[in-house]
Image 1 (tube, rainbow, N blue to C red):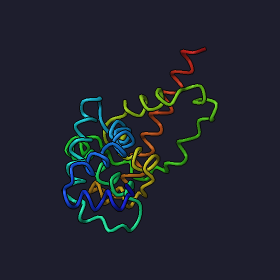
Image 2: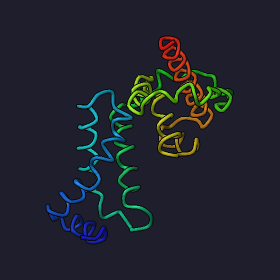
Image 3: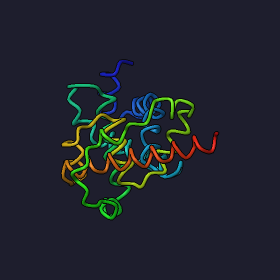
Image 4: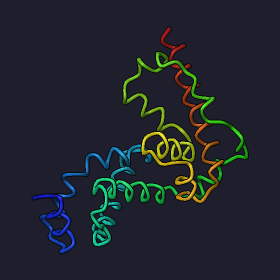
Length: 181
């Protein structure tokens, strides 16, 4: 089946089409969920909740842009809702004048020896607010204005959270390097 046929089948609530869409995108979207969740069980719950929303909202997909991108946006929004912004608000502090780019000066060699799994674990260890902004900006490619809109914060706060996330990651990487020496 083509993507258009799968979408039409899902609109008609065809279980075979829904299963095919799930099978096609679940592993990629589980990876997205893992970047926002604290553990596998939470990630799997997010994935299930997200696909329920995908199938509920499938009529809203207008074939303008990528179907995978549309699903990804639902997955990210579901993940953000899973970890309520109450927890996020507690982590925000007032350093909005920080320039995020100045804090990512670690030489590439400093993290080149880390595996993808190790890097993802370091990201997963960040406080929720830092992790959300880092994932949304660095991995998902959202702008600070988009992040601010989605999280209900100022774009300067998004920049600040990114800078703090990068500083925290940099410190963790440097600690790992010291242990390896």
